[in-house]
Image (cartoon, rainbow, N blue to C red; front, top):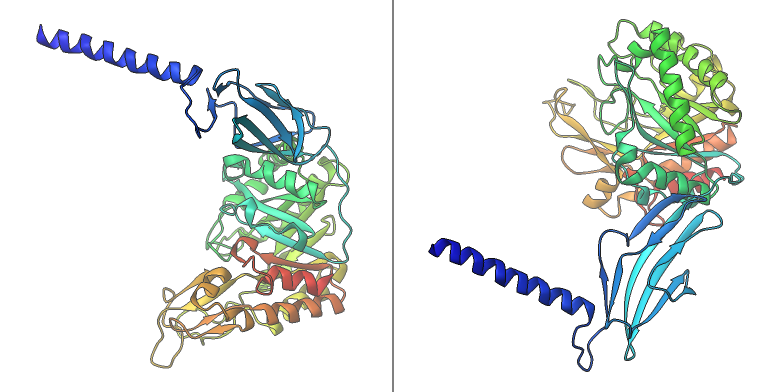
Length: 445
């Protein structure tokens, strides 16, 4: 009996509290200096929206206190557009818009803010002299992109499974792909979906014995299905094209057939995607380069011209794995045996090689005694490291700093190559004077 009485008492008290709260929302007692209030009932006032041109952002479900006494003002990019309790923003074109809601009472103002990013239905690509392609990894954020320092963006969020499934989950999380396309097109920069199988890590290249991508494109039916999936996703997101990172050549006995199938994939994409769609491929310069098919149907190929492979492993001499001379040798391989320079975009790293153990001769101790770290992490160890390419930390860290990237960019431009790319820009520093992407862009434009 006592238990029932306690339960009933709890229900009555809870009801009184809720009634009291609702009363306060409707019209609380205001004293001198009290701020007006804006109550959000539900989720109809989001801090950010990403919408297509022609869609609307609706702000509703709001209560104001003191009720009927506050002065309401809605502003779009600092211009007053409404004084109603609800507001529907209908953009007439693409762009970024800042929505501010103000509630004023007795000279005091409370505000709520929201940003609306509108993806343009059409845009004009910005002019450029040389391609500066920035890669963003699947873990990268749109905030990592400085649109003024690139001509093209490739977002590496497409994962190709052995079953032929195209997994774009990383791009759908928090509408990252939508935001990249919207911001890219607002700035006149094409955005590509970059697809891969399994990559080895921060260096963004071949995982030993990875076979997922190769298994798919060797199969005509799976390859056709992949092409169709790509066509549909590119159309749905208004992407400008696709970048292909097919790395299943390291330890896969089918590497030769994989490379032959890569040529078929490029041709089938060219025949299927809308006119004007961009198609690029990332390629290597190891001994397997002899097996690459004719890739002239691609708009250009991105030459993986860093990480020479001779400075890692048991007894390997420590040193700069992504040197100026190595970049030239990689570019020469593709220029001399595959494609004209104006079809080649030469790659540079925004990460460093760190040795963690050495042998008695001062060489790399084993396959497990090195790793990689981002250029931004290198600067975290020494903020002045941007001016060099070696850091005396751990057992030595070798990386590309601003002077080396600038030197490489100067060569690429003078030698008539189509441009350069950076893997990846989310590893770079955003700081002016320390950014590798900035050095690459300034050296090429």
